[in-house]
Length: 261
Image (cartoon, rainbow, N blue to C red; front, top):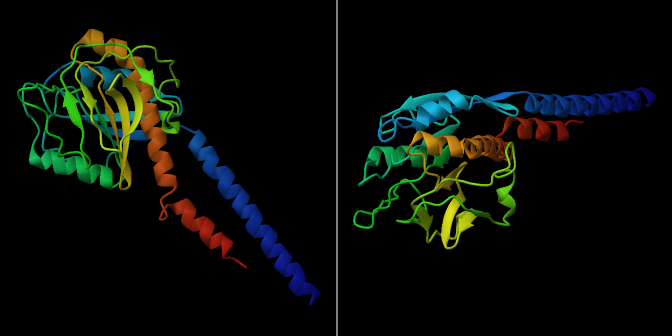
């Protein structure tokens, strides 16, 4: 009887030590630099945004970023198994009219549904043309507005580090902005009735909608600190989303350990 008790205690202690090292190991891996792969739809409208970001934002805190730039508006490569972040660049959806494709819209929706994070930069919301949003699962309207640099972060807890890490953001160059969002959108920054940045969770992933304007080199350079924050925020957000997925490896392992004798 005593041997059984000692064996049982030994097994319990072993499981606890294994759990401890598993958790420590997980946090150690997280603390190390993780690589996020970014697919950028760009170079169709402006030739400066995608090259500047892909060359200038290689590492932000504990994340490194690898980029692939595509001009294919059908987004045939937009697969969440291959990329973590999808960047829809300046005017790539709307600029002087609708420039996207039905295939591209479907690809964006599927990318987010499968766990990717989609970042959207400012699009041209010409009042005479409009900017359709079939690439979004919820309604959102664009508004033709004047260029500004001011913004006001909201008090939503989801704002997190967006305007504070790694840079303290004081200005964002913006132009045409988003408004009249569905209630599912979480405003992160506003200017009056308009959204400067907003978050939308969808299925296993998320959208980050911005009004950031990157038409020329001067604008991109001014926005670069915010772009660094935006990529860091997106990488962190995706890791948090994946961490709570029930099929996530750590969650499964922890459940199995809890059932151990």
